Length: 185
Image (cartoon, rainbow, N blue to C red; front, side, top):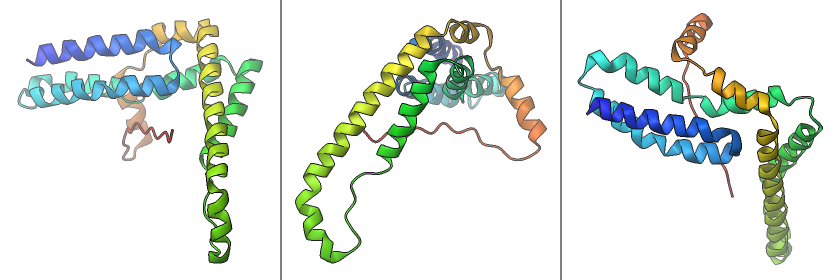
């Protein structure tokens, strides 16, 4: 059963790697969420087989941080590209809009006037957020398609778990690998 779970996870990881270059960061996170099932299965079936522990954690560590590494590689490969400057600007604008929804005033006397205009402000905010989100995804896809160096790097330069463990040991402090993705759409 452990070998089948490892095989299933390996297939899914390869599929994620092979399609990452043409996906946006959001699409990569959504696709990697599906891996949770395979990883949970692998951890469950291998818990009693101590001989397989290192292999299981090798796969688990390989999975952690993959999307972030891809995105950092993309940014390094394209840092001088004018399209990347547009991408960074849209990303900053999108972040600003997402973190600034129309909020009610703290002054109770102004609340009635705010409520009257809230639907209009909310529509404007949602529209701006949606426009920036679509533009962000489009630019991200264009950059991923444009960057031959990045795609080739994905094939040649994979983060090996042993390298990750070594890097963490050098830090000489407790470390947790966490994938966080929050998107309010």
